[in-house]
Length: 261
Ligand SMILES: [Zn+2]
Image (cartoon, rainbow, N blue to C red; front, side, top):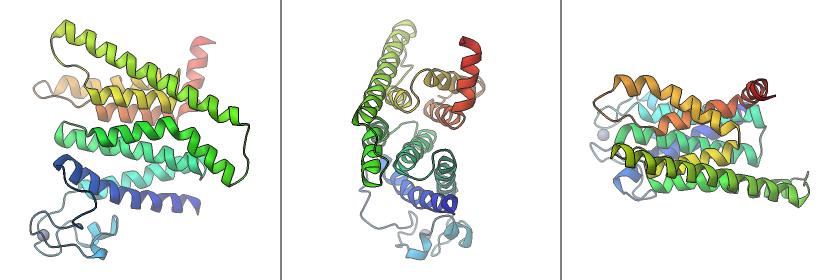
């Protein structure tokens, strides 16, 4: 039951993310005008906006002019639904589940935008970082409102750890980018990568974040080698590596323990 609730919550959030993905890179207002077809400009009715279902019923075409609607919409909705559902399995419903799912949904949206536009909007990127850093405060608020409140130092320690690990990762990526730029005279790591690295540090902490960087690099090798001519966006691989290590954190910690026990 709670799994279905989590999935439908994710579908709704994914539907809103679609609006951000389409409008933010074009510099449009995210609340106005209401959703409309980019081809014929007809305003959409509410039943054209039901996540996943509308796209299937309309068979991926505009209800008015029949021009094709990008497959990205239902994919983003479905992925967001899955992110919310899988995290509900791991964390149970609550503030930690919701904010964590929001962070990963934002990372997924950033990945889609990076694939589409080879650029990532700072507004979404900083939102993900802010949520990742301030997560302990949301958890504190939830525990305070719904019982099971722990000692205040518990939340403050968590907050400090997140800021520390986020800062270490951000500074490391900044330094790495600077050195590589000096060596090969080309931008290797963009500002977006530095912000994502800080988000990764805050979400995973050490040593998991190091394993996530390693997994991301492994995932990026094949596309980086095969696509020699054009740039390979790195953000989607960082996001995917973070997701994999977060979901399977117990397994990764076990491997780490085997190596360094
Ligand atoms: Zn249309």
